[in-house]
Length: 295
Image (cartoon, rainbow, N blue to C red; front, side, top):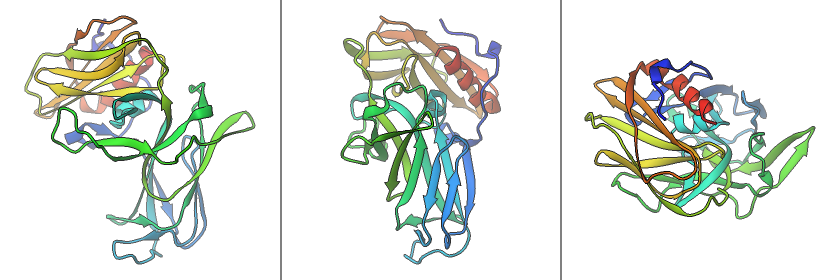
């Protein structure tokens, strides 16, 4: 079921290459802010940010008065979650996400800290059909490190209860305050899809210097990171009846390789995929194409 990557029609938005070593592409928006004034900002995908005067301090705890840059990342669709290497899993559970965003403040190259709450007004993705019980989560250090000695991150609850969803002029909104900068997501557990089991995906080992693979669900706003083991990628607690695609990206000698394989309903526990070499600048568009092709 895998398609030849080189024959795919390029579509969707592009994104800048942020860090080759972790295979992460982030479509960033840079907003310039006068921190001594009230700032009301809007992202390209509708996120509204309201910042009070005197909200930021430097590493010495001094309130910043010079012009600063606010870096905003908005993720609406599954392809963006994959490109940003932000799966919708927490501990051993799979979740659906209505969207994600990240806020970072800098004065020059120095990262700033937040001392006053920032008010957020967030339009909910219309693809998410059950927004009433969305839980706000933030990215923090994981309590477990599966298959790896490297530090992993995990989504942890930001509020103790689901955030209320407001409906204004036909659009659903989440409205809340954040007291820290970083990554945030609105999510809820993936609906039950029958029994769960381990998924294993084989690929031809080419001594990749860097590699990542993700499981992208077709009928849900959900993305799972797979963990490498020898010449395989593995994941546990995957619903057996879910339709999904595995997308893998590898790098060797600054050359990029992309491959995918899909399954529909009952799948074999062992899958295989073929990787094709692609141009580095084409990776974001090709991943958008793959995800859109198998919605």
